[in-house]
Amino acid sequence: MKIFYLWFLFKTMLCGCQAERQQHNNLAKVRARYKISKTGKLPTVAHESSGLARGQGGTTFWTHNDSGGESVLYEIDYRGALVSTYQVSDVPNQDWEDLAQSPEGVLYIADTGNNSNTRRSFQIYAVTPETSAVETITFRYADQDSLSSLTNGSQQYDCEAIFYYNQKLYLFSKNRIKTDHPVKLYEIPAKAGDYVATPIDSIHIQGQVTGADISPDGKTFALLTYGKIVLFGVESGRISFCQPQGCLRLVRKQTEGIMFLNNSDILVTNEQRQVFKLMLR
Image 1 (cartoon, helix red, strand yellow):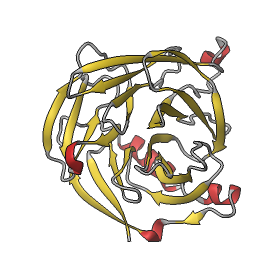
Image 2 (image 1 turned 90 degrees about the vertical axis):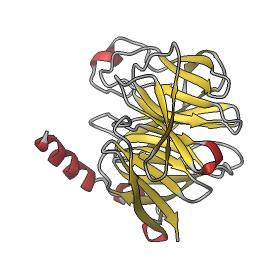
Image 3 (image 1 turned 180 degrees about the horizontal axis):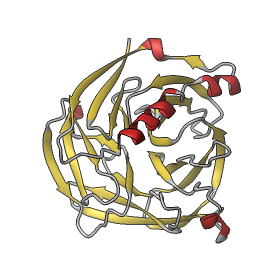
């Protein structure tokens, strides 16, 4: 285990913003604009925090555990204290990886992990805690069209990052291809049904994408990796990789959860149960 963490730390330390700046000459250096502070530690029940969404009244957030965990959402305050739990009935946790949220408060649980590269069908559960209503969105990838995609080692059909925008869900591939670094962007309706997800855009990012969120005003979205946050602008209501705005180096172990607190400040959690706030100076 120590060898793994030393290797992981080494890989993360190398995961800076240089590659993104070389690709996009106008990419801003935003690290100096933010004050980063550790605000607390998650309770032991949330030992593999993988997704984040806003809780009630702006003083709490929802999170969940990774694959193999219980089908439970945990409501936690910013110091890390457990406020409440919500059991998602009759829904398995095969590999929950992220949370998205609509303006109406519907939570979308992304059961979209694919570490073994063997899954060909994925689920996103639309949950309304106040009414206990649960709807299922099922999808497959249009470009996962042959058995060779399961055996060639590319591992590109693994998603740990989604967000909701204008009645649609946007999904980002984790970027686990060994020889290249394309992150693919997919779009599906945010309502119950069975869909085929076709890539609508892609970009080269050095590092594995482990979380995503969009600002409340819908003008900025962020991709989290092990080692940095990449910020993109939303141009004319279109989600794409056309407007990269900045890259913020963030080496805080296994960071997997990200959430906008407002239009600029960000909350991040890692699988070591730490909670960080990134506040714009």
